[in-house]
Amino acid sequence: MKGRRLFRQYRLCKFHSNILDTMIRSPWMSSPYQKLEGLRTLNRQVDGHDFVVLINPEIGSWCVFTSEDYARYLNDNLTEVEWETLYVRGLAADDEGCVVETDFPSPADVPSVVVVNIATTCNLRCKYCFADCSDEKGDLMREDVMRSLISQMLSLPVPLVTFEFQGGEALCNVEGMRLFIELAEKMNESYHKVLRYRTVTNATLITDDFLELAKKYDLKVGISLDGPRDCTDRVRVDAQGKGVFDRVMDGVRRMRDSGIEVDGAVCTVGQHNVHCAKEIVDFFAENKIEFKPRPVNILGREITSNLTTKPGEWFEAYKEMYYRSKEKNINNASIHIYEENTYGPIRDYVCLRYPCGAAREIISVNPNGDVYPCDGFKGEEQFKIGNVLEESIADIMKKEPVRKLQSRTAKDIEKCRSCTFRAMCCSCCYSAFGKFGTIYREDPHCADRRLIFLFLIDEWIRNNVLNGSE
Image: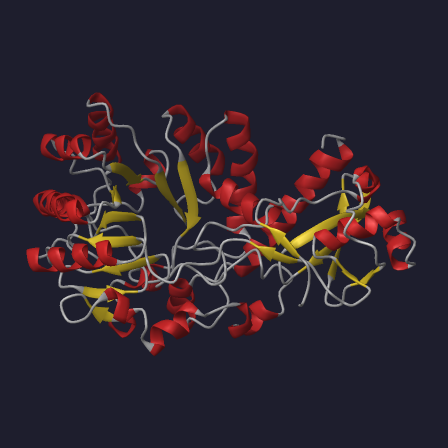
């Protein structure tokens, strides 16, 4: 037995050491504690006050000390309750060298979300498109592929299946989307699974036919939009190079007029808008659209466009959006994702945790049935892991290359394995591939992520220690 187990109901909070004595010693603990090897320290100065953050890089738990309290820790002068508080947070061991184990949900072994690339053609020519789609190439999903994919997903041992329609531009094939959903509903009569449908669209092809389909099957509709007109029209353009902001907003209005709300916007941050953080937040707040800002991923057209953020720019934009989003009371999903990874023990966002969700929670299927580990690789032939017309998804998940990808962790990446924040983070496999030619490298935005984690720790100190609100 390596340690005593904590059940998942336990929430791994971070406590300033001056308030540790409010805790009550557990009756099942009787042995003394000792310092745990492998911990890291961060010296932080917040609003003129010095603090030391003790952090366990293996699980991402941490605790804040004043300089005086940290000296007591070094000299083994903490109270018994303070030691136990460190112990239950994975920051100390008992006298046998045992540490607390956590019983949190494990990553999935089979997918419950499939990105259905219902069309790999697109009516736009966005300058950073990671899939390099256009109206001059691409295919529409065939019915035999639909039937095989649906049947296989319904056969997997998961109670909930989400079909997310992407492309290209999914609305280039509304009739295919309708056929897919009708087939799924009919075939599910034998399985009784919970089915959910979602799409992410550029919103320039919203029609009455699509709106009727979305309302009938509760199809959630997310959009791609990079902020106000000037930001969007610089990069999100049609085949003639004309910006499409007005067409997007017309699509949003049509959705709302029909009673369908926008299910969030993906806001790609790059050289076209990285210095417009305040304007981006204000735009989404004024239009009452929740949004998720993220830097340009490095694949497809981005490899030659070079529009992604430069070192430090994504962090500065994130920080300005952080304060402005809270001020405007608009849901910024990137704030939630990074706060969850910094402050909590369970990292649910599959793209920012090791192992990531590629070929675990999620797969991506092209119109011809080719299967890829996630939507980022949909156009990269070397990452094809199978075809639903030739083999089952269950068998695809058992392949050795897939197993290897599923087990990719920080230990496999030189820079990540030594990082203090490795338990809070994850290198995006397809961005790493686009930048370095291998998935076994750090995320191209690694330096900015480190700054974001430090910023959020400082914010916690400011709000929970200096301001006295706990």
